[in-house]
Image (cartoon, rainbow, N blue to C red; front, top):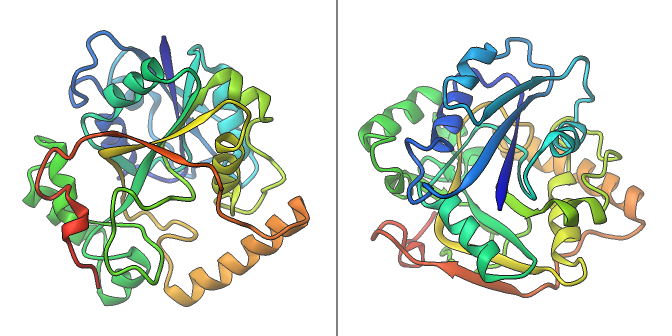
Length: 298
């Protein structure tokens, strides 16, 4: 079994090195027997990272720079999948995210435990709340750097839970690992499954992808014979980087989401609904801070 991790980046010279370190064998635990590669696809950055920086994280790291690509990451993900040599692919549409150190080991175990799983990690914002709100109150990259230094990251990646907030529906004051999710920035499936569902839909051509990531999650989860598995105790954590939806003020986010919904209806001819696929849960809670069901969120 070989895992191919596809990381799409755009203007992330600050954030991407951290993301790649969190995918390296120096950081991930229990992966001595795991064969994997990391394919970094630069989606037209104005100031891309030097390929040597990407390759410095290990011989399994590869760098692809697209020339004049579409603004949506859909094409970049499809290109990464085309180049992948693994029989399992992991889609990371946002290259500005950090993983916990047991993520790859748990993913590989899922593909041994289930015949055809679709494995997802829960998404968190770094910082004291959802970044759309916290940036209004002064949260920025300088404060984020301070928080990461405060927990001594990357020495113990599970301390990311101490400085983060799970992405949740607006009505939720508490979160649980058993809450359903509608997308993931670390979504894994067999390469054959990705091919059978038609890959990422490049009709989602809005910068940032609009609801492309939700769409691929839904199609993979509802595909014949797949089992949707949500990892417990492992997460993916969003860094501030100026994202088109995650790092804008709430009014701008809401306006963008309206456009995404309209495009989804134009593509599918129906409203967006949550997947009806049932979830399996795999993992454990490694620290007190990871017990998100015990925490209140404003």
